Length: 476
Ligand SMILES: Cc1cc2nc3c(=O)[nH]c(=O)nc-3n(C[C@H](O)[C@H](O)[C@H](O)COP(=O)(O)OP(=O)(O)OC[C@H]3O[C@@H](n4cnc5c(N)ncnc54)[C@H](O)[C@@H]3O)c2cc1C
Image (cartoon, rainbow, N blue to C red; front, side, top):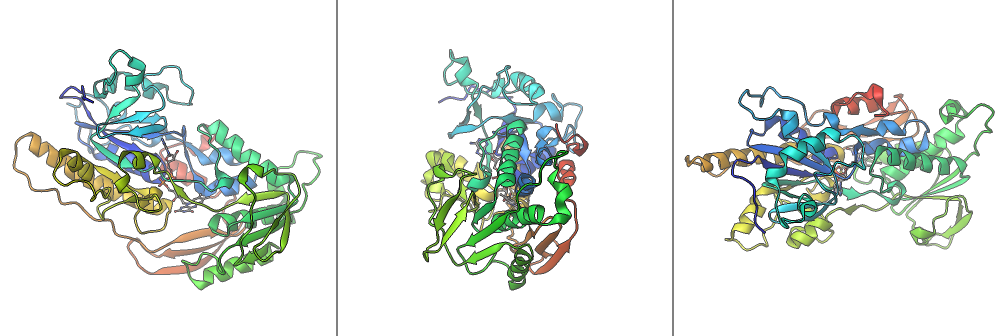
């Protein structure tokens, strides 16, 4: 495969995945890359999915749209650090967000499931980006099949790559939606199933299971919250819920202090949730889940539980299949991406001397949930990793420039990611929470705190603003 990129073509730093880790990396790169480079950030979703609130908004009706944030503000239109009268392109035209699924990776290019130059759009809000791409990405294209224009524009060359494709969501939140409209419809559909249910069984007592159990109980069984049900005039009140939470361990959130477990147990008791610890359900295959039909399931000890809605809140599988096909030596036994302290993908198993391994070893990074970074899988850890990966890429880009100008260089001095202790905030009903956090960035000690109050839609506006979007227009 030969790259036909013209020598002066802007070089692509591709960020795969535009969620908490990837979107932050793209934002930082767009602020700091020199005019020789552009960020191309690719995600199959049309909008940033603010996952933290998905359990809440799938229980409490009327808020789902607030959790899908347009990507339009992720790459700042201009930046004082890079704006320069001699630049051929404005920041906005140089950097791009592409709504496409990555289907294959290669030493020279990445492949997408849709044509970069496609003008007929099936996703929302990308007219300008596609126009820009038509002119801008053409020189960066790899012409694998010159007469087959359509195929060739599904490929994009890369010089640096950040692999941030995250993990699959637990089944209760997995939708396959790629647009805001479909995402909202999925969450509202889940909400309608919850509303109709009488016996809710929740499998898995991690943060997700705990939040679902406590929100459902607080909304449907607590008369103080009737206003949040959004009932139509004359509509009969929905049935009260009998809620059971089954957890395989003897303790909730065992990474955290005993106070965390104790507070969770206390709140679930107040809310009337039945808790079964140290047990496993003998669950039927997922295809047999039929909300609205009364069924029974056995626990390992032989006890039977009845349910008409099952929420499966377990399982975290990395989205590392693409990397596995390209360089399987980079994955650990669970399928997470092995990384070095610098967050470069660890491909120590590749032969030492060849040109291929030199590029893969130096220019491919992985961050966020998909990376085996030795910290909890969380939005805030992925966000912090983005800063380290970008700093290191910038350092290498500067070295590349010196080499290109035949100037003396020393090997780039890359920084290492500093792990932070596990931190969490878990909601325990519509107005209660428990947190274990560090007081300041960089602290190693965490503190347990109980919380009360706060809006039912979870400060969503702050996240919109952080993403450069206008929260007053949350249907955008
Ligand atoms: C219900 C819930 C609540 C949570 N609450 C918190 C919290 O309060 N605080 C906290 O810090 N963390 C929280 N987390 C964890 C946090 O959401 C994750 O750690 C975070 O989403 C990981 O971010 P990421 O960028 O690594 O990947 P992900 O968020 O998993 O995103 C991966 C991205 O890659 C895209 N993608 C995947 N495959 C492809 C492909 N082939 N082509 C193109 N795009 C692709 C996806 O569309 C997605 O946008 C919560 C998680 C859940 C599920």
